[in-house]
Image (cartoon, rainbow, N blue to C red; front, side):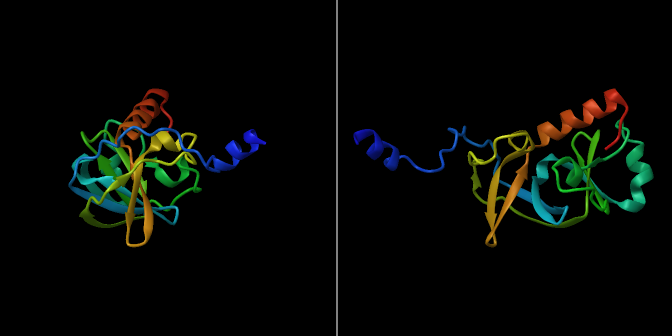
Length: 154
C-alpha cells in the first residue's frame, strides 16, 4: 500500500534535468517553416536572402540550403527566404521571415523532447501566447558541414 502511495505522488510527466540554456539576451529573428514559427538569435545570422538570390546562395561553401521544414519532420517546405548563419557557410531555407524582436525568457526543453529535436533546438520561447522553438545554430552548422562532405543537398 505504501508503494502505491509513492507512485501516486510522482508526477505523470518527468522531464530530464535540463542544463541552463545559454542564450544571450538580445534580438531574435522569427521565421516560419512548414507552417510553424521558429526563432534564431539575430547575432547568429549573417544575412537573409530571398529566393531570387538562390544562385548567390549556391555560391556559399555549402552545396544547397538546408530545407529546414523537411529536416525537422514537417514535410518539404516552400523555400522563399534563406537565413544564412554566421560565418556564411550554411543557410536554412524557410517560408517566411516575420520580424525581429527582443529575446524573452528561454525555457529549457521539456522531457517530451527526447530525440533529435534536443539537438535542433536550444529551448522554447513563450511569446504572444505561442511557444516557439529557439534554433540551436551549432547543430545546423554541423549539419551543413556534413552535407558538404557527402555532397548531398537537403
